[in-house]
Image 1 (cartoon, rainbow, N blue to C red):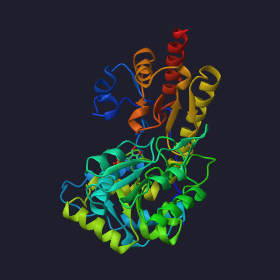
Image 2: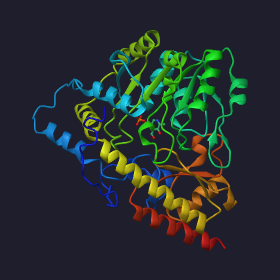
Image 3: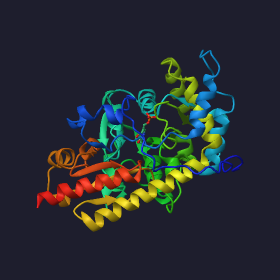
Length: 401
Ligand SMILES: Cc1ncc(COP(=O)(O)O)c(C=O)c1O
């Protein structure tokens, strides 16, 4: 199955520092609005500061050699390549008719909420969690129910008793973040089986956001698609996956839905079509093909680099700033920092990072309950930047004494 995946022998340089100023990058341009100053190292929004891989840039350049950028179809091999990728990486065999294009996972979450539930229905999420989960529920006038995760001192675990106690006859949907952002958990098969058992018992449909699926860090359990857990989950799950996060091309906007159950799929797809939101752009299509054809070597090298960055920060904090405890992520490039040991309230902590340490991180409370006294740090950047960040933080902490 790994036919073309390993052909690329190129050694990539993740140490290179790329200046993203004057490129309209959200990570840079929104600093003033978010932190009140541009004078921070931006370690927040979840894209990488690494170069988007050469095979993606080349595929776009190649397309630009043709002078007409007219309406375009997805290349014929795009979805078959995605299906082959999912099969090879996640041992989940998809049929062509289960799969289709969606223009971004956050919009797709909103489409799912709108097409599968009604105003007032209850939807469960597990905070602290990627904050658009709250928006897609509340902004569509559904009722948000929090099944807050438990921090067991090392990692997040699900609170199944709380979950069961919160399900009512009005509960129609559960939105799962698998793997989890911001905690970096790769939910185990056992955890997902337990979750599936509860959802099946109460007939709650599951939306599984699996955008981080291809970013399990070396040394961790592999990703399990929720829909692959059982026959019931296969029939009652809407899954979203994308190459955008793992191959650092979120600005292109390319993702896929996977829905086995025809009834469920029709409801979702009819909504997508009625909203005229079922198509992407030429470059997203080209890049998606390039990722699934040529991406494996870059992906593995990137994950090694990110893992080393995670280890660097973890060691640094342990040895120099033990008041801050990182939750070690099993997937992705986001570090959830428990800063209770600094004895500051959430806003004070955020401002301390911005104005004393010169660091722009996400405030924990945007991820909902459980985010108090926490910050989320993006470590997908050159090691040099992280060394500088840690030195700035250490100086600021030393000055507190
Ligand atoms: C869990 C999760 N879902 C979705 C997204 C964004 O998806 P998209 O850019 O396709 O809307 C992110 C980005 O950080 C994420 O962490």
